[in-house]
Image 1 (cartoon, rainbow over the protein chains, first blue to last red):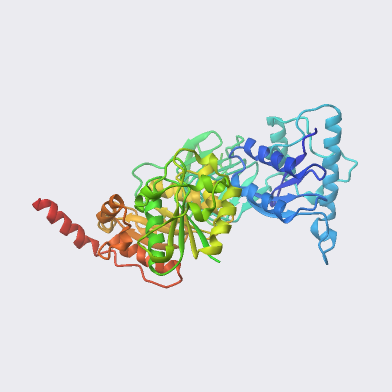
Image 2: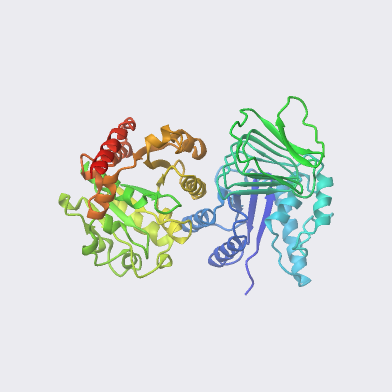
Length: 284
Length: 266
């Protein structure tokens, strides 16, 4: 019996789970659960939408899916079916380019399976790295889809390639407060419109910008970029890392400034300064 | 159609069970039909705090596994007429895996047809027991004490509740000692709300009568002199939609002083 295919894809709105449209629902549910369990806490707090393909879900199956994701700490945003609800054109449900994308992924899977290659499912980390460029820019099917299903382990070369490819502009915007136990990992910049509470963690390949109070652990320039900065309206990190530097606030720091601050590396030391208007210069 | 409220905290020992017992008893004294469910399978307590331990015949696992009907397993609290307050005790000899979230949803659906309030006492932790407890709930009350560890866990719980579609949980701050807060030795209500960013539904002061009432199996809310009981009475008012101001927390200073005098003399 073949295992149901589940493709996890990262996009600008979080993760999308594309579910096999042909297998038994129970099998599918089991496969999702397995996938979520395998991801451990990696996906906790992630915002997820589910694409069930042509499958028509019963009310009960809907409920199962709706409960499954939250039980692993994920936030389920929406469930898409390709079946068109009355009055709604199919194109509204799934944009055309999106659809094309799915075909590409499906083709890739098919090919990789023929070659007897391992897992067809991408880890979300990889997926988010690969998929960060906007979906709408996906080239026509002639170009091989950027989903090298054969490589499961992320290799550093690829990470670097993405860094340069996407330039400095890739950013993930999170519009809520990160609570204890929630982690954000992203190869580009991370912008948080909310607070980051103690016990939460933000790891970014680029800069970290928090429009709120930062009380968690920050790691900017996690892939080695020591020009990365961390800035917050109130910077109260438990621990602050930039590239390979680690620092924490002094224990006796009672006079915490009530103003926005920037942390960056200056002369090989992480320094925290008052935020100044104008462009934040990366020193490195 | 009743409301299903889960009482949870993440950290252990902050007063989930005490809160469940008191709120349940309080709501019943206001005339509502209330059922309490203890989901702390393997470490059951709620029956002891309610003073109903010696009447347990069947437990939650017997019900969810279909061995007996819910109505048969429910223990009616004789302090109230017409079975207005009932308890579904946890099993003591099994563990959390003996029940699954689907069964809990079914159980809550069934009980809320007949009762005005279904209060679920959640076990500590964020594993299976927690998942079971929140599965059938529509609302959540997070209990915390003014300690960083409890706040940290409460924050985690709030995140998990949001992820399970239990939006806008309410906060009960338990065991607050206003004197210590004034001296800057304890986190204040503001400090806690600052981090958790959820609405406070009540503040329960530290109160020795809780220890006594717990040991006697008589919820403090039934004791008109207990300050914690008063705080719980206020919370039940707020749950039922009445706008009651926070009780004057400064007063316990006098009480503490009085107690100190008693102990000083003794």
